[in-house]
Image (spheres, rainbow, N blue to C red):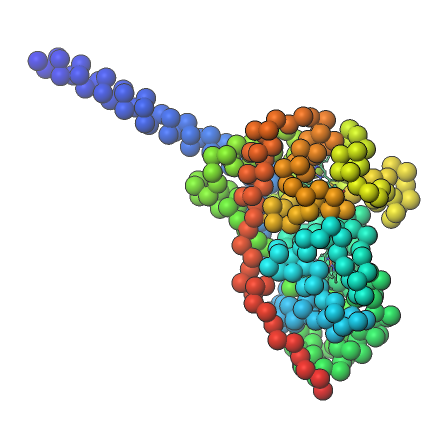
Length: 348
Ligand code: HEC
Ligand code: HEC
């Protein structure tokens, strides 16, 4: 009897082990391996994107946020950063090409300003060195604010008395704080706080259920297929330039109407033809249309094109869907401070 009962217990224990414990352990170690790999090539977003030249302070961020919404520093009074980077649309306007003062069309599609401050450069062709440089040059940019000079922008800002107070608080001890360079620093400091952690970050930090099984599979594909060869770092991009169309001319697949020579315009080097900055893929599911000219509407098509002309691969429908599902896990939470609208200063 005793012998029989031992015999009966052993199989039950084994059954339990085989059915529940081992698969769960294997599943957990699958997640573990995925997290380890993804942490090495991608990684979670930092809390902010600091800069030694422009330290982030609460006063600069508060001023920068107001300036981000300020249209009166544009030639026709209608253009602000927020016009082309509307926060509710994840700071990208959803147009193929953005529209500036007097309805002027920009030559390229606008990327989001979220998670944008830690890249090798700004703009598709890398012709802006930092977010501060970008903000400064935008005000005189012909298809953006269209102001005739930096002095004309300073003059407008000085005519609103509250700006004097806000600039003084943000740049203490400066004799004349209301300058274009301080405008750029304040806007830049605000942008440096715009990080949007999402399900992918929660997953990397140990929350196993933050991503679905399909998203985890897609993350595996994103790494296995070689997307991370170019789209790496916590930003999944923004760290290098690459030719768009390594295996075939891009316009054959994007059906672009105009052929943009990319970084060639900056360097005039023959091997920079059709080279663009590898874009950040954070929030990419929210920022259609895609590519430097907004030529492709659907994320699924953008992923398929990437496989074809950047990797020379025909990705299967399942692979594309998995990768798209993973890219949705890069959609993050917009910081509360960016979601509230500031009141702009009134005239002196
Ligand atoms: C008229 C529309 C428009 C306005 C106004 C505008 N932008 Fe942009 N922004 C764009 C477009 C278009 C691009 C892409 C330009 C390019 O790459 O050639 C861009 C690019 C950027 C980038 C680079 C992102 C990246 O990933 O490379 C940043 C940062 C940015 N804008 C911030 C701002 C700020 C700050 C302001 C206000 C000072 C501003 N923009 C005003 C349309 C606009
Ligand atoms: C050899 C480098 C390289 C590889 C590999 C690569 N990409 Fe890209 N990716 C780029 C470049 C460069 C662009 C910008 C193209 C343009 O619009 O000029 C881009 C753009 C994108 C865009 C559009 C982003 C936007 O905001 O418009 C998506 C989505 C994307 N890649 C996803 C992927 C996926 C998914 C893979 C893997 C299947 C992949 N990429 C592989 C370099 C690469």
